[in-house]
Image 1: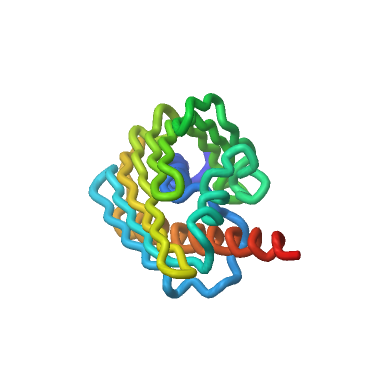
Image 2 (image 1 turned 60 degrees about the vertical axis):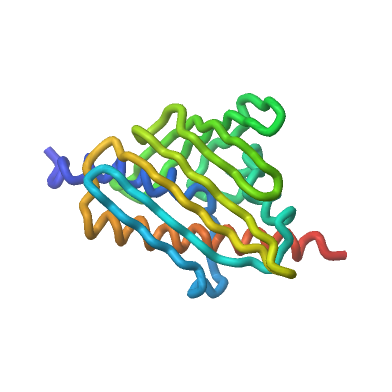
Length: 195
């Protein structure tokens, strides 16, 4: 019998929760992220997350990254698969799967989400099935001159109990890294598009 098996089993849903709340954005982040504001609240198996930051890009440029579900696995390192299953106008059904962690602490996750799009203002995501019991998230975009403000709010229910301090800090740290990477991907695409 391997040591600490119960703890290791409990951590699987924690990884899945973090990935679902913040997905997608797991490329390496090298830009300054001190202005990205992250707030996480944990109450038993319920988690609420808020993220706010700005990027020097138009809402349309930000939108291209946030809604590029069919190519997301190419720039999100934790995703092994991401694809649009169905599309009906501005409503999508998106399936994603992947793995997080390393070594013996490597956990699989999956989700099927209903995505409602209001171009270039809002993206709402509702979990239909997957590694969590429940998850709803909304991303809002607001143009501010040459900048776009991004606010993300999510409420989720994990399939198991989350350690209050460790879980909260882990989710906050991962969320900060993920949204820093998201901004980097937006800027990378801008740079690549320049003649």
